[in-house]
Image 1 (cartoon, rainbow, N blue to C red):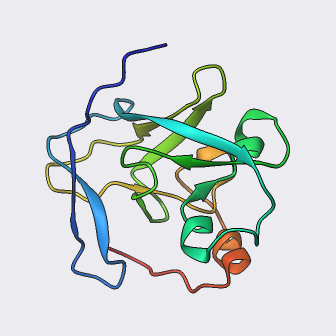
Image 2 (spheres, rainbow, N blue to C red; image 1 turned 45 degrees about the horizontal axis):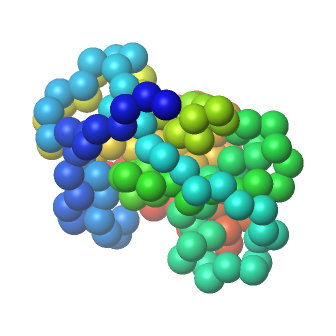
Length: 143
């Protein structure tokens, strides 16, 4: 397994309705790894966990080809807020049980780090708000 080290990320209030978020403590270049987060995968149907937990889960099975599996992402992975387009994308590694977050463009110091909750497969952009509709919540636009 690759060594996982603390990222150059911190958590603070966004000053918006999003509440807290994760921010860059140093600049990141496009294509650079921001964080490699260990995941805790499990098989349990949606609706069996508190809504607060369901909101931070990732569809691990969809990402790694194991239908039904969900995952809690450790590190800052479950703290990254949504944006469209986001400044990061993510990629699952089933063998190492890791979710990698990579910058899709240059990111400046103190910029909020975001992912796109709707983008299938971890992409940075997507055309609809399907994740928010499934969760029955309104998306908060902008940061």
